[in-house]
Length: 351
Ligand code: NAD
Ligand code: DAU
Image (cartoon, rainbow, N blue to C red; front, side, top):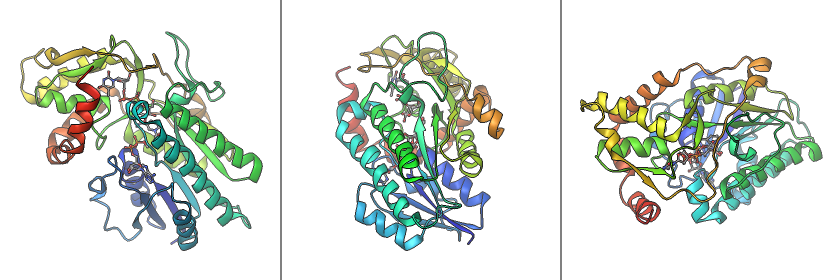
């Protein structure tokens, strides 16, 4: 094997698409997927590639520093693509500490292990930190986040991600670590845990349950198909410049209510329902605390410097996404029991 690459959080939504792409595209790399298999981690996401010769899975927690140090000694990684995180804003409002532990302490544990492992020779090494557009705060009706936009995180989740971004940059400046960071907008597509707006709504529509829309549904997000994000990650990992940040976005803004109406239209078609049936499930509920109004990414640097742009139009992406969830009912049904039901009750019963 030419290189050994550590991917953290590879059993999660975006991580599983990144692992698949790397395992398939780079047969001469050994891909090690490290994941704690929290509620969001699911090895079923990788069942099509888990017997490949260049793929290995390690169950472990990035908050466990001795374990992480041992892992670096065992594999002598050439590169790290770090996606493991607590990722859901609503959970961060309910329990911030888990976000501090995984997103901040966990990232520092990986940085320390990489720094110690690479201290005699940083050439050809790379620590790639995957982050979010939420670190930039909230936009008004106009404007876009660029790489120089000042950080203004406003939820425990985005604050913990902002903190980890700062630490990654600090390790570049202080220890000369070869790092790169990207900040991406909202992803959608197969294998997303149904706590997030789109898969949650698909599941509820299918079972004729209310679709909970926070506040007035006027908040705007910029949606990117997950495979386009994975492709950007591949390009940035291989061609990005050390110390640089790249914004990744879909150039695809939707108000939540318009997005859900579009989703309802697609679901009506796919389920053979009369047009307008699923929309009747839309239910306005109490807003998310501190709900950021609008995110919109300017990804022109990534296009200009590395030639990436989104490949899929939203109209096509949302149909592919709905098809996947309807064809993979078992995947969804295995998740939406037990713990998920408790989570759902806690989050939504008093809204
Ligand atoms: P996810 O919640 O679906 O997956 C997270 C994965 O990390 C899971 O497999 C989980 O088991 C693992 N994990 C959590 N804590 C861990 C720990 N302590 N040790 C080891 N593994 C642990 O998340 P996602 O939506 O795929 O997001 C992946 C990354 O991309 C995150 O860093 C997130 O901040 C970032 N991001 C997400 C989006 C999005 O729209 N989902 C957009 C931009 C950036
Ligand atoms: O912008 C990137 C971020 O996108 C990532 O960093 C996060 O990990 C990811 O979870 C996502 O954050 P959001 O908070 O934007 O995603 P979520 O799917 O939770 O919500 C999308 C929008 O829909 C948001 O405005 C809140 C709203 N919403 C969400 C849920 C779950 C609802 O109206 N109802 C809901 O039930």
